[in-house]
Length: 569
Ligand SMILES: [Zn+2]
Image 1 (cartoon, protein in one colour):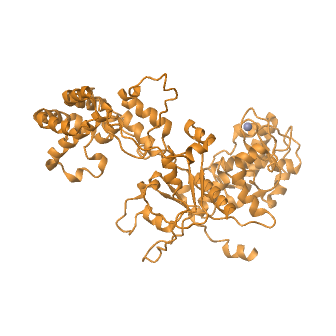
Image 2: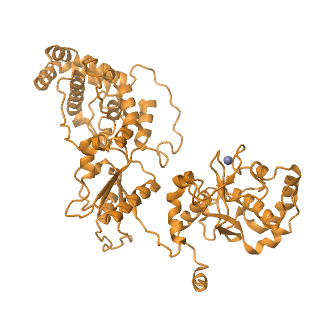
Image 3: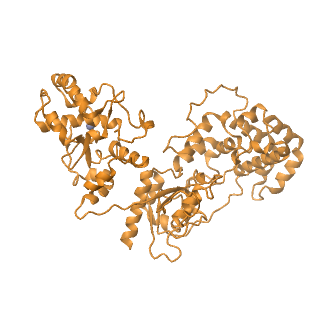
């Protein structure tokens, strides 16, 4: 250990490692302290100085008690981040912050109930603690990693109210993190609630410290979504393709200048995995939600155990919504029985209408295509241009031109539509659609784009507003923006969002409707079909199933899966 230390003491750790170290120490929910694994404490050489600090009124004042007060104070610094040698300068001020006075009055008031003790602490302790622990080469000062140590083992307490886990401060029973709680001793190994909440994250460390130690299992997880698909000019594969290859243990390091890449154990994917992507043999599939239906379950689960794999496991997690809970209680309904045949409801006038609108817009687009600048349509969803251009008439495709074009070509269009409308549609509906299609198409589009409502100058988006925060669901975020500011949206997006056009996609925003009591039910179409916008919101609220996974969740699922495979082997 001595040699190892000598060799590495002046080495600067890689940035990604430093980032993990700081996070492991400071994370509020899964950091070392909240998992009751270790806490930041003084170094042994500082104990003398701490023992000599003046006594605090109302506290035991043994050297150990004084040290526990110092640790409670250090805790506040840890929340601001810890500065290691070699920490990148740009972390200063955001990932690691300083504090000018170092008083932490609100928090220290919980430790030092007696005003006299607070006075002694602020006036006599602080000037002594500052040079012991703080890096004062910067302003405001920050906590330097080399002045503290990591205390393992020892006692822990937990607040039954705010669930905060911390070290006991001798002579103090108040929670350090909230104003109401009284901390009680925490038995980390036998407390069932703590074990259920944090046990999983503690286990790796417990095993590494066990005798004999069990080495940790390294899992490399990567993402596989359509969003990673754009190939950069200088690379042979898109990120998704690269991940696919690494997942199949294909060595791609032979390429000149290829970055070193390790094989991937877990691929976190969206529902695209359900169809056709060949990622080789899988030994396990973990489903983050219950799939919408049996067919989806079979497609997803069926990815595992092909090509003669002797062992394959499938785990499905039930989230806290009614759909998932239902199948969590009755798994047989999800995993067995015949698959319900997909059915096309060709006699639904609402659906036919949407197809007619799509047809009209498509023909209009075709008619104007020679004038459209192809460079102005970088992606599929901007193919019809922006809502603003369509409304104001600035675009080649615009609302008044569309109306004019429909009037000019009314006879041809009506004949064409009459030719393909499904024969299953009732004669009344058919006649109605053919008679009103131009007016109703324009009306629906007008409603969707707020046509005729005067423009309100929307305040400019604050910087960074367009890129959703990490962890947020980008799809949901996009929807909100579309709803709030239709004039900012792309026309096609807006029309899809408002239910003017038919949607085909993975079942991310649909729900299955059950008729529980057929006898007492009236026929006809669900009420919401006349309010497509509301219906859409409702459905996305019920069943949004986009794969937006936290990294830890991925690892959690992955290792649960691996544990299962291990057991099965
Ligand atoms: Zn508390």
